[in-house]
Image 1 (cartoon, rainbow, N blue to C red):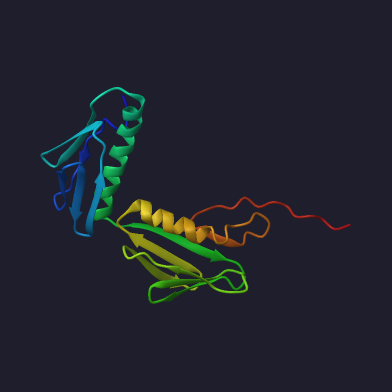
Image 2 (cartoon, rainbow, N blue to C red; image 1 turned 135 degrees about the vertical axis):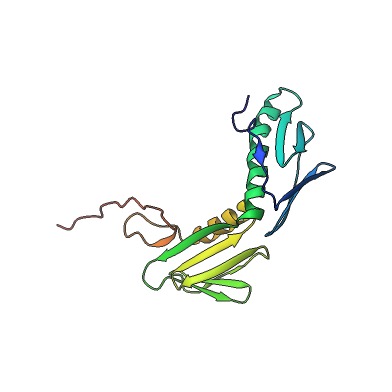
Length: 178
């Protein structure tokens, strides 16, 4: 039995969870999220709690059981409290700029790199070298942060690059001169 899958999800008072056909819809103060679920799981909603059970004991349903419970929990958390990721640009001349619906990165290339900001993600520029990505969908916020970080991941010799807040870069010793 999946340890994560068998846990019951407690739904806060201001959040409504409903099941329409094969979709679970979660509505809260920050917005609405929906996700389709396969018919190998049974979802029951009663007295502000969601319980997910398997219909059979196949390998696929066992793997999907814990995953779906974690996804529904993230949906409930997202519509209650937004998910945030903070990115820091470390290096000389590295900076973030916000231009309407575009995020502009200056990270050591000959040209600035532009990213179109998705509609359901809010970007706050705290300083020229620090941004915060805020949204209700954990997957979309994390994916957008990873796309930005992939432009210039931190390197181990000087520590330059775009890194997550709180991330530690293990530094390597460079070459020594004779």
